[in-house]
Structures are given as structure tokens and as C-alpha cells.
Amino acid sequence: MEKRKDGFLIEKGAHEKDFIFGTRAVMEALHAQKDIDKILVNKELNNDLIKELLSLAKQERVPVVRVPEAKLNRITRKNHQGVVAHMSAIQYASMDNVIEECFSKGIDPMILVLDRITDVRNFGAIARTAECAGVHAILIPEKGAAQINSDAVKTSAGALNFLPVCRAKNLFFAVKELKRMGLNIVSCTEKTERDMYQADFTVPTALIMGSEEDGISDELMQLSDEFVRIPMGGNIESLNVSVACGVMIYEAIRQRKTSK
View 1 (tube, helix red, strand yellow):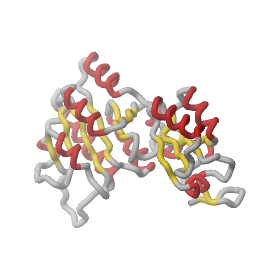
View 2 (view 1 turned 120 degrees about the horizontal axis):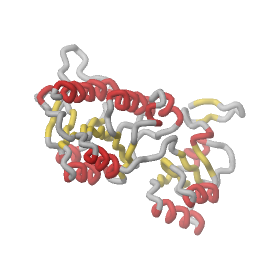
View 3 (view 1 turned 120 degrees about the vertical axis):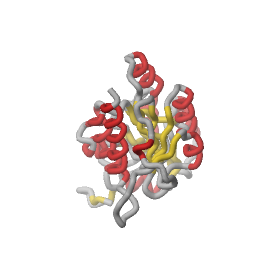
């Protein structure tokens, strides 16, 4: 939590330029097709205007989360009317367009799939590494992912201004579609004895990385073609997720460079 100039507590990272509030203001942003990360709505409200907002959000495929009023008050003490929209700092890309563009240029796509990675600074660091390495896009779920706000862009050192980020309503179906399009699905997990050096990253690839706490979900594991792990030689058994992503990405890049 951070203390604002007016003395109220505000959620860390929730800078005023990252959100808008008020039912009508949020509806206008939806009508204008602004890039909204998610909308928070007071769970006690269910009037006609709220129902109209919920319908519009569903139409525009913007996730809505019902929350207690106290949650909204921690974001802003102004008259939010029970509605706060977190604005995205980027414009989301279409995964289909990314894949089609790669294939049209004769490039084997390299897609990074992030499952349940919610820390903004970790996400920004991952995006920075991915962009520097030449990853073609990052795929994240609508819910259960880090908010892409000004902190994320800052931590990425501006990489999020260049790296396509695609958002899926259902990550399982999105990865299933990548598989149908010919990508090899590789999951990085400690639940295997196969080292990352044994995977073939020279083919079209979707690399799945999970959170440090929960790993990769079972349903995504079931879609995977390969399971690999980062070899560990020390006493600590895991890496920070942004570091782990960097290790995996650069093994993929090494293979692609040496295969040419």
C-alpha cells in the first residue's frame, strides 16, 4: 500500500493514469473501444445501468471482476460509483495475425505463454528479455495475469511498446489453437527429468512458463508435446520466474542460431 498526498491509502502501483472510474465514464471507454485490462464492479450493485455495463463489457470481451467496495476505495476515494476500470498501457495483438505473419515471412514462430504469472515487475522483466531475444509474442490469459500498466512498461524498459502481447479469454483453448496451427508445445516444469537441452526449439514453438507458486496448470500440461526442466546444481531448487524465462528463451535462441 502507498499513501497519497491526500492521506488516503492506495494500492501500490495504482497510479491515476492507469485507471478510470464512474459507470458512465467506463461505458464511454468501452464504446470507444479503449484498451481496458479489466473492470472492477462493486459486488453489491445490480441496477439497470450496471447490467448495461456488464453486457457491454461482455460484448467487448473485457473481463469484469466483482469486488467489495473497500477494494475500490483502496484504488480511489473519489466518487467511483462502484466501478473502476484498469486501463492497459498497451494495445493487445491478435495471436492469429502474429502466427500468420511469421509463416508468411518463412519464420518459425516462437511464442511465450505465461500461465498465472501475476507479479507486474516479473512480467515486465520477462517482456524485456523476450523482446531482446526476438520472441514473436507473449500470450497471457484475461484473468489471473499481471496487469499491464505503467509499472509493467517501465520495468520492461519500454519493450512492451514493441513486443506483441496477446490476451486469451481461455488459455487452454488458445494453446490448443496454437497446437492446431503446427506449434510444438513445450512446458518448463520441475516434474520431469528431461533437460531443456533435449528439446527441439528450432521448430515453431510455444514455450509455457508457470508461476513460481503454482507452476503450470494441469490442463495446459495435458496439451504439451514436451516437458523440460532447467538443470539445477545448487542447493536452492528454483529460480525467479523472470530469470527462468530468460534461461529458457536463450536456450531456444542458441539452438536457432546454431542450426542455421
